[in-house]
Image (tube, rainbow, N blue to C red; front, side):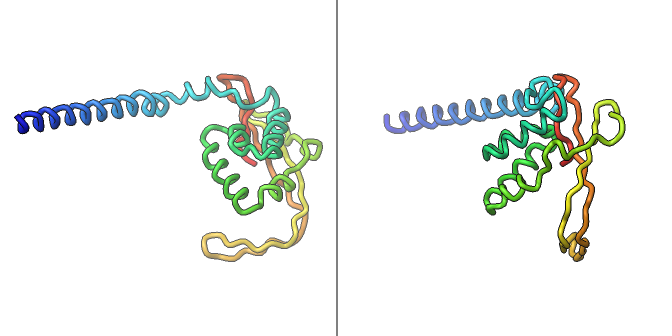
Length: 168
């Protein structure tokens, strides 16, 4: 009788394991595969951004000032959101998030560069930078102190008609 109970328990345990595997496989197929094979779905559900590049930029800066780095990352194009979230987390963890925010230009300092090209719009701002040494792929580069031009590029999500930050 004990042997029979042990066999029944093993059968039930095996059934639970198989069913759990089925649920995990179903979830993976339905959720993960659906989003990877249908990126338009992501773009159609995207609600983070403004009707103009200025509105998107101001929402982004506002989110950063509130230390809501997750929200701030959502104002970037989808392909860069996780990268930006990681960048903001690292800046916060190092205590450099406020320095990053202080380095962002006010919108009045930004000028549109030429005419808009379809779904892309580029804005330029100039920023004084002290002499800086940076290591890139094992080599040290020295950038002299001077005023540098920087770009902010916005891309229109045509599925929702909102502007996203592409490059900052």
